Figure (tube, rainbow, N blue to C red):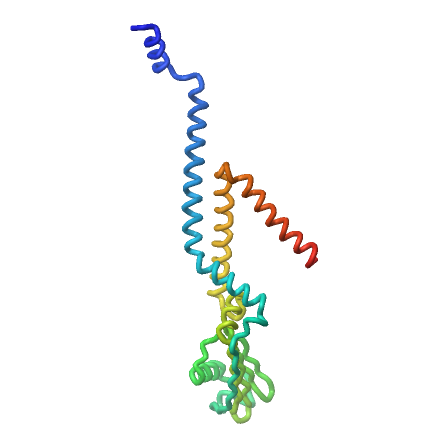
Length: 225
């Protein structure tokens, strides 16, 4: 066996002096690669899940910011009627049939909005229902049971604007807005951290992100503050 072959055999059999460092670097590269793959996967699928959410809040942001240009077709309907006088007991407020009154109005006028107020006064009862882009107010005479009802619908634009603001939308929609906010935050964060894995575009991306923050700060400082 030649001297070179013997030396090669010795090098293979004996562990390298920097083997520990090489293994550490290898593990670091492996973890880094796995992290980048996971972030890319998370960013793509969260983006797809929240695509409709982003589009909705972006579009309604425009309709809210330019409310004078996006005026929906609103209309008000006023009617009169009578209900069972026993429900609006004129002598004892504790015997007023709240549930019967609310269910009667809901059934009669097909109201699906949530009950927002039930006011009892000496001579009348006021009942209000509110939902996104919708409001209904009923004033009931406690002597006769006669009432006036006014229903206002703000149209499609009014509905989506109230959904954007979470006004009169109930608990479930409030939770949905919170989930949407979390998804949008995750989209932003995963996109930002993915940038850190791109050596060629990392610095330019960070500079652009910084310019965006600076622009927002300058707009606030110069024209708003």
